[in-house]
Length: 449
Image: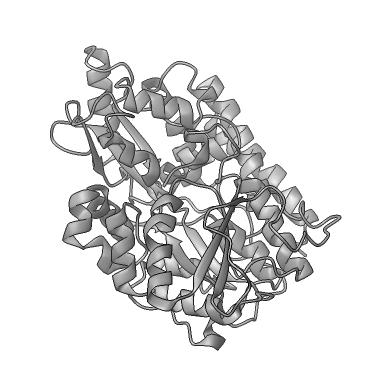
């Protein structure tokens, strides 16, 4: 699975559309093919055997539509129409569809940060009422994202006392892991950030590698995504249980100072302007010794059409300070409350949740969402990132905070981090400035009395 900016330069699927931006002026979309969508499967006439799935276009869906959907039709006789549109446009179209009860879609395939908006708006079906269950075989951090309100952590206003309901199921897994040069880190993946800096720094100084590490430094979502596993590894937390900002804690400031100081010294010149395209070129082109990246980009390491250093790149769990925790960003699907083919949608939810189907998905090249599929020998033989991804899940993997306002907080935080990265110092002060701005914003949004 890949961040869209890594291949197309388009709007990143990690950049959540700002809260409420799609609500103003919403109107029902046409009853035929929604404007701007690409029809993947052949159109079918309306019948009991039809299912319409909407999704944002992403390379990770290629195995899903090529292998999984035909298998579902063969098993059930239900024909599937998959409608694809760019990330930001689909967020708006799907939210509008649910809000206006237009009934264009039966199932939405979403990015996991969309769940707070969609669930809070009441446009996703309660799956538990249809007998859909959260199997224990799901990777815990993945299935947790299907519940609203969240089963753990702070809850947004209006949902404090509600019982969590299962309103979505994980579709395709995705999380950060370490990709490293095995001719630089000859003893295996660096287990700590200190080890990474020491080994990569020595190799850089000796002229064995141009850059010790590469990461995304662009303000907003890109730099926060790069800093995220470092921040978590230092023991940082973004909020307390009352939504008070805590990312400028001593742990957070230590992580920020490390990021904009020692780590930047190992990175390419101009890294503050790097996004997915630039960091991908550095690791796949052989200039960088290490990178923390999502699975869709990591698997390019073995593709001769993408990588100039095939055989020299291996995978590992992200380095730790006190912990080794990566960011997750999965595909997740739910049934529209206004689905015209709701029974077929529920049938799909139950069918796709089977361990055997998840194993098919893994063998087809995607990261699965259920633990047994990660351990399938045939899948691991084709997809050597799978065992490492499972190790990372067990070591630690967390989603972004469960609030519709995370994108704004991330924007404020990422702007200040970028300034400090450009300067090469002042990470702690940057967090204090971001905390002040984010607190003012959240207060305006009604988070605090």
